[in-house]
Image (tube, rainbow, N blue to C red; front, side, top):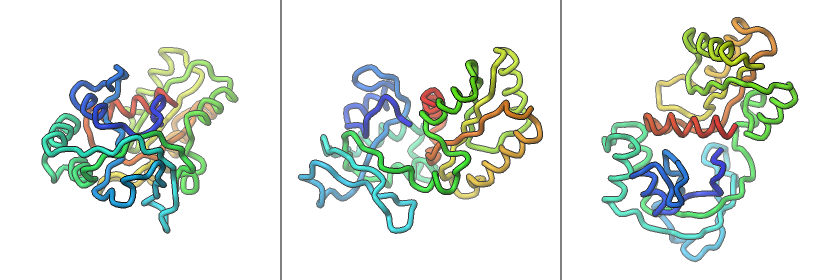
Length: 237
């Protein structure tokens, strides 16, 4: 998802992104990718740690992280990060509430991904990694592709935009890339979004002209910055 990142960011990169949307080395990045906790008692001297999957029964290991640093985010720093990313510090905001609850200790370092949580099993026809998407495009022989990223079911304006863009560049096909993770309470769940988009493609697009894919990521509700982060996902796909 986060190519060319190798893992979770340290505090210096986190603050740099909050202030300037760039890592310390100048790489554009709109939202910090961090691993945070309120309890480091069991990992203070650890060189590697197991990351557990909170979305699968039994919390199996989903990745291994090399611990390069453990830093404390001060209150004023957390306030700045929150304000810059979400445009507010109101705890009733769904993204802010989640972000502020994630802990004051920031664990930085590269990770080794072991599996893709429940997405492979629950969305076998839709979930794809960036490499898989590129391979599928190559197998189809598509050279020019229009991509559309969404977290919601597509409506008629989205459909028309895809068709207009495809015609404008004489595209070989259209890639629809949807978010398959969790949204806030009351939003449309992923299985419904997936089914709705597939039905739209079936009814309103010529056969074999659209590839429906998705990635496993929960909505952050970070406004314009998250829109840019999703564009990074799409570019990496």
